[in-house]
Length: 120
Image (cartoon, rainbow, N blue to C red; front, side, top):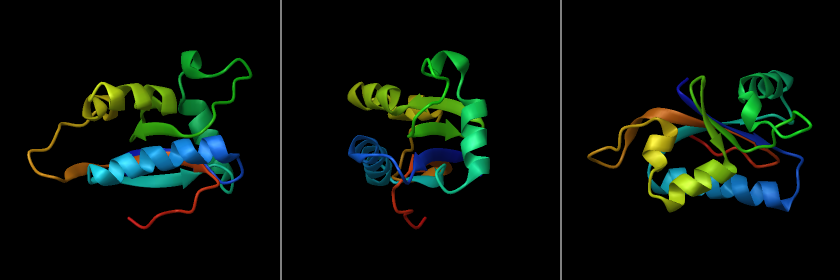
């Protein structure tokens, strides 16, 4: 796999809204991605927690979804994604080269919670 977005199935409205914002934006740019649920898969949860850099973890040490990765490279959380979106630097944020056409050859993965998985 190339790029991930981790999401979670059991958190509240605010997290769902952020997850949907990331997914919707990636779909609008026609960037291929996959979502990994941390609520129903302990391996996904463990991998996410181990791979979010220490300086990006909250004081309790447990990062909340969505967390965005390009393969094993950590891209950021929702706040840094939002800043990149506002600054029109999403491709750089994701570690992707802006495509001349409409499709990027890499896949973004979203770590998520409580969001229906969308088909690729």
